[in-house]
Amino acid sequence: MTDLQLIADLGIILTAAALLLLVARPLRVPSIVAYIVAGLVLGPATGVIHATETVELISEVGIALLLFLVGLELSIEKIRAVGKAAVVAGLAQVSASTILGTMLGLVLGLGLMEASFIGLALSFSSTVVVVKLLEREDELGTLHGRLAVGILLVQDIVVAVALTLLAGLGASGEELGPAMVAEGLLRASLGMAALVAIAVIGARWILPRAMDWMGRSLEGLFIWSLTWCFAFILLAELLGLSVEIGAFVAGVSLAQLTYNHELVRRVNPLVDFFLAIFFVSLGVHLDAAAAFRVWPLALALTAFILLTKPVLIAMLVSRFGYGSQPSFLAGLLLGQGSEFSFIMVALGAGVGLVGNDVVALVAVTGLLSIGVSAGLIQARARIFRVLRGAGLLRLLRGLREEGPVGTELAGHIVVVGMNTLGRRLVDGFMERGELVLAVDTDPRKLADLPCPTLLGNTDHPAVLEEAGMARAKLVVSALQIEDANALLTHRASRLGVPVSVHAFDPSLVPELEALGATYLMVSKYDGIRQVAEALGRVGVRA
Image (cartoon, rainbow, N blue to C red; front, side):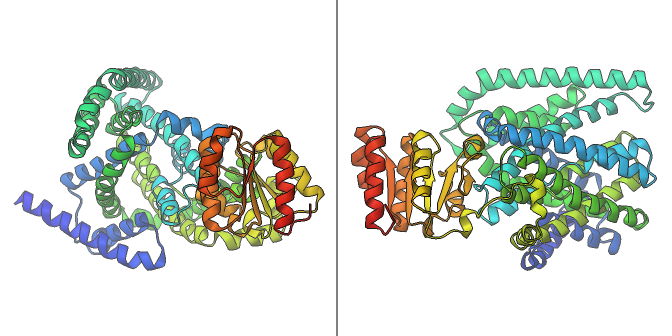
């Protein structure tokens, strides 16, 4: 009978989630909001579903798998690619949001512990919402998309540290005196060190051979990765840590292997299934009376998230030389609560640090902020134009305002690579009265140029779209990177845009010609002369 009841409950939960998704999709409402609303309908509103231990266990598995998936994304290459801007901006934003959120909580009449929990919990942004939105809009490769994802990775690492500390507090017992807290934190730190050491040993000597052998079967690879995940979950339990930490560390260790992209692709649907159950069960658990009591506080916290978090991130990112547009868009993308906020307060309630009212407060705030943020993100282009027209974006870059970006240009020359050759080409084109857009991956190389600039990697199609390459009269690459030049040549020729490429190695000439290069710069002197002659043939003053 119990098994039949579980199957019935899961069927009802999934049916309600699917129906709410159908309603939410035309309105472009995030799936998390739809799932929580489905839980509210099934639980507090109608009483159709009651929280059971089995459903709670399944939802907890969903959270563990979410942390496992987050860990799978943290390869060393991705961490390096995040860059200084994302690391500093992410850490500074979490610190500032936590302090300001704690102060706001105290002003609203909460206790210090409750206010601190809320400040930290609401400093995180939703990985699920942001990544899904960027994937849907095909903007993962854009500059603002990569900045947002980089900051999310930093936040995820902070979440892992916070969960470790909470595990230590939970292990310290019911009486949370200073000595007990210190003992619990020490035990959690030692357990985390042991877990990481085992993961490093496994990633270095065990996983490569096992995964290479299993790599012959994609199904076997998937099952083996889940086995590794649940083994670390059990190990974390033995060490007194949370199951989420065990899953996260397991994911990070697997992320260093060559198969991590395939694992991410296969784990994603499984995570979506369990997360749907988790968020629906969150709505079922929500205390309607507590939610009604805290709604004025939830409105205040929602306004705090929507106003302070985007501004903080935009200002921090812009200080690293990024333009007002990518800085603003990255901030707007991260202006909502997080699924990790729910996890943190639930764990805090489990160890007796906060009460049910705080859980309800964070849940209602997250629901409101995610819903409003989704609407703001959809109107991001209009909001950017209004703010720039009012001159408010100058606050991001001091008194200096940017020139037009590539999406607003036409009939311009795109110069890629601000090395010596690239800068000479920019100066030469500017002297001839041409409209030039300079592109590079290093903000320092773009800082003092007298023309519009775009920070980004031309390997990403979204960067070329931002540069307005389809409307350019000429694309010039001064790069000394063989693959980047070949890819840029191919894409420009497909658009029918003349392209001049630096053939720094004569052996590259046949390949570039075959790809459709219009002009080749075999040396710096010949390149500038050839470009000048070519410009005359396409109507550019030489």
